[in-house]
Image 1 (cartoon, helix red, strand yellow):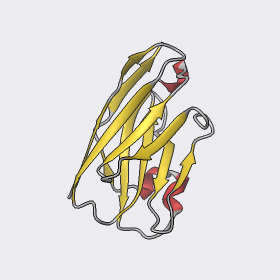
Image 2 (tube, one colour; image 1 turned 30 degrees about the vertical axis):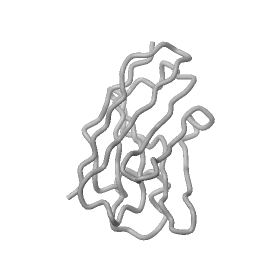
Image 3 (cartoon, one colour; image 1 turned 45 degrees about the vertical axis):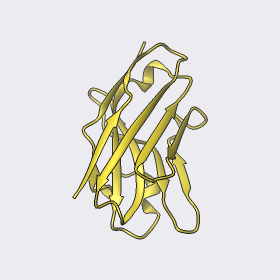
Length: 129
């Protein structure tokens, strides 16, 4: 079993920055991909950023709407995932979720389809105004 706990959300002004954190615990040995998703009221959940943990080198993918503004990263222990969000816009307002793809062996998780991820955190709210 794996637990994901997000933190770091809050209210920020347009143009500001926030850093989200996600701490993973439990049986994370076979983690294949980690990602951040978001869901605004009345909208579908969308992938924001994904990190593929290939033994040959990590690969990242970003939604077009956040590329160049958001950065996904992981600490050296591999237990904490981050999302650095800069130049925030009102459209970034949403609940942000950390997700893990555990057990698969390919890079299709980089497509950020929610169905590829089998563990989810409870979310942290980000409000930009």
